[in-house]
Amino acid sequence: MTGPRLFVEYPARPDPDCPKRMVFGPCGGIRDDRSCEIDARPCPFGHNTQPVQWQGGQPGRNSAGELLRAAEAGPVILTDLSVAAFDRGNLEEVAKIVGASSDSVLVGEHQNRPDFPPTVMAQMIAGVGGRPWITLTCRDRNRVVLEQELMGLRQAGADGVFCVTGDGRAQGVRPDVTQVFDLDGTRLTALAAQAGLSVGVPEAPQAEPTAIRPGRLLQKQRAGAGLAVLNHVGTVAALREFVSTARAAGVTIPIIAGVAVYTDERSARVLAAFPGLHLDPTEIARVVTSDDPRSMGIETAVQEAADLLSVPGVAGVNLSGLASGSGEIPAAHVKAEVAERIRERMSAR
Image: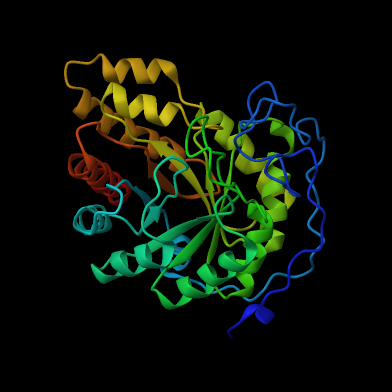
């Protein structure tokens, strides 16, 4: 299966009032006042009472990667990869550290810090024994390049692809560079499924309008998603309500809940700044003001993971965040210790 004729794009017209040219909005970056993260205009999807429906028919044949197979058998750990940009040695060392304690590693794509191309990242991580899930955003690539990346990831050893629309660039970050948004995350999901990849998608349970978020995840499943990774929620009760509503609506794919990993003020601040994430400020203060913030941060993350895994319908956790402001290697060791202690708790049950 090669060449652009493999792909059939969803026939739809993007909303002209959305700077990201989305069809299946709103994105997870919508602000609490329902304004756009890019330029503060009202989000055209911000007052929707129903999710935009997927009308594209049955998704393509979905490959079952190792993470998906593991999620069917029991709780999994997916760990964010935080590395120095364009530094192969740093990437490989971090991948070895966190990969040894995780089922897969999730490679992000940041609006203010470009790195190696997705296919190269997949090859490097797989080359040191990791199981990479590669984030692919629509911000920096037109549809042709997205198709090329999808076919490349099939050959490069990626266990799966994480399809997102992408955050808009912050003010002052490469203002001379075009933001493309030929597609949105849901339409990219359909192309990734057609390419035969395992496909993951995000959802933001506490981003407005919250009432349509479970149904929006169902539309992504219909487009071809095989796995969902949720943004952080403020309480376990909020996660329980979201998962229960999503399951009742027909969502059957594994759902992975986000665990915030931070051990100092900088790592907490970076994580809290992401659009669509909701962290408990009391917990943050308890960690950063403790006598031993590293130990307290690790214990807080382990306990949060245990609480989230107790929610019916949750298939695993995503260890995300900078973890430590002391550098990529210390941060990797923090995440590895969190993962190891989560596994100890799971095996003791």
